[in-house]
Image (tube, rainbow, N blue to C red):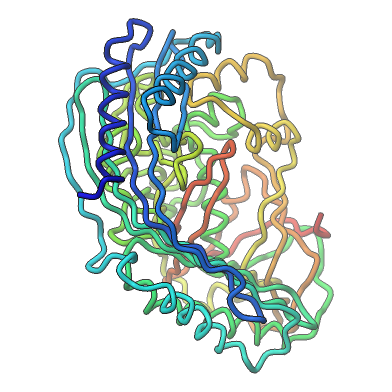
Length: 486
């Protein structure tokens, strides 16, 4: 084992011993992390940035005086570790959280998971990774583009996590992604994210993602821009647009969002038609896959929606204890570990229906291939989602106590990034500058669910934490108002 790996493990052990001996600490989790990372930027002019580096650090989440604080540091000397631990303890003590957090002090876990990669992403050299991106861009050589841009990032992550209650797990994860865009000279920008935890196999797959994006850009370039009617509209969503919508909705199934008073839904509510079923799962090799979460809980599937009704919410250990349910491993670490883990879905699975593509588009007025980022109607909700938040989920209840009724909570504008007007089920020109208005009852208007599914991946920001997500969903048809985009 390399000196850097040993240094991370030694720092983790030192912190655990220190926190176990501190009477102010009721519970703590500590992770030692060793990463081999790559960061590449490619534009029309070729590779603009190509970097390989290693990073070693430790993270810790400390419960003190009923509240939790989270810290991450690359400084692993004893003085720096003592300082970061003291800061975490003081922060928990001064948060003045009304309701003390609870944690699992009784279950001890021991586990090792070697990841899903048959060949680690760190075993391929930098030139090969650059070449994979440049070869992918070749699929768009026939397009009239103002700009093409890609950012390829990967990390081979070796992590050991221990708790003051005796749990220890060791995991290996090879996570790679590429964000890229093709900006049409006379049309919109086509943006894509592709990622996996399959290691070096990802490099063989990204060519397909570039080809699919180029095909979508070609279709948009060949379509004239047309007016789309506004007001109540029958809209068909592709599997990818549907996946983006369900990812947005899943935020309202996070327990801490409900505690904050920002979710329009409760367990038992009807959210969609009787044939709507949603699970949060863990796919081997998925971009969002992990074997254990930040609280050393095994990541297990959980049914969120069944027969169109909400069956349960997404929890971490603290909120699960509040609701008397068992946590399923939804305390998801942030990418890079610099920000706290958050309650979040991993890989959403939306069950397929029986409608083929023609049936989904039949009598629909607009077909949506992709959405842009949602724009939340409620200003307070926007501020809270984007702002800094403690690592203690129950602090959300303190925020709820300070707020008033929020009639626009759970409502958003989803601008259409790639969409078409339909005539007799066929594309009749692209629509620009139009948005779908989402309100909490929109999914109840779903009239058809497709029989074919697609997967969309990405990175979601929750309270400054960058969280990976994936959704596999079918296309759907629904009724919703369309407006001019904000």
